Length: 294
Image 1 (cartoon, rainbow, N blue to C red):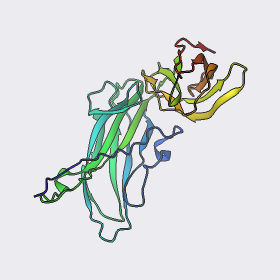
Image 2: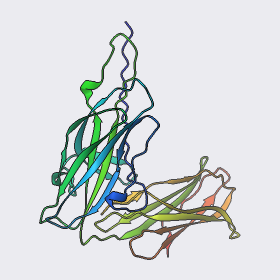
Image 3: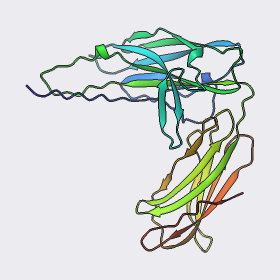
C-alpha cells in the first residue's frame, strides 16, 4: 500500500491591498481564474453611525468549463484580522482583537452548497452599537470547504486541495482620523540590489493608503533609479509598517542619495525622506537610519 500523502493548501483571496478607497458597492471583486469559485466583493469599506444597521451581500460565483464539475459544500465563519509591522496578514479568533467588528455581524446562510455555473449569496447584517468608538473596526467573513467533503483514497498518493476565501470588512464609525508619518528611512545594498526600508506610522484611528515614489541620485546629482508613484500596503489605525522595497539593480561603488516621497492621502502634505547610501567594492553599505524629512 502506498503511503498516503495529504497536503492542505490554503488559498486566501483577500484583496485588501487594492486601491483606491471605495465604498462597499464599488469594492473590487476577488481574483478569478477560468475555473474556480470567486468571492466578491473582497473588501467592504462602510461608514456607519453608532446605533445604525445595514445589510450587504457577499456573492460566491462558481464558474467552470469542466463538464464533470462537482458541487462544493462550503461553510462560513468570522475572524478578526490585522496587518503586522512586516506587512503580514494575520487572522485571529472572532472578537479577540480590541477593534473587532465581529460581534456586530450576523450572516446567513452559514453553510451553502454551490453548484457549477451558479452564483450564491451570503447576506451579512452589521449592527453598530450605540456606544461604538470612533474609527475603524475590522472583521473578515471566511468561506471554506467543509472538511467532511474532502474524500481520501487511502490506497493512493494524493494531494488534497482545501481552499479558503475572505471578504474583509472595514466598518468606520464617524470622527475618523488619519495621521500618517514617515518615521524612518533606511537604504542598503547587497548582491540582490538596492533595499530601501521606509517605516510608516499611522497615529489616527482609521486606515491610510500611502502612495509613494523613489529616486536614487549619484554623487553628481544624476538620477540612477526612479520608481513612479504606486500604492503601498495599507497602514491600519494605530499601527506601523516597515516593509523592505527591493530594487533589483546593482549599483557601482560610490555615494548615493536616496529620496522617498510619500503621500498618506490623509489631507496632509507630501513627505520626503532623504538618506545617504555608500556602496563599497564588496557591495556592503552603511545605511543612514536618521534621514532628513521634508
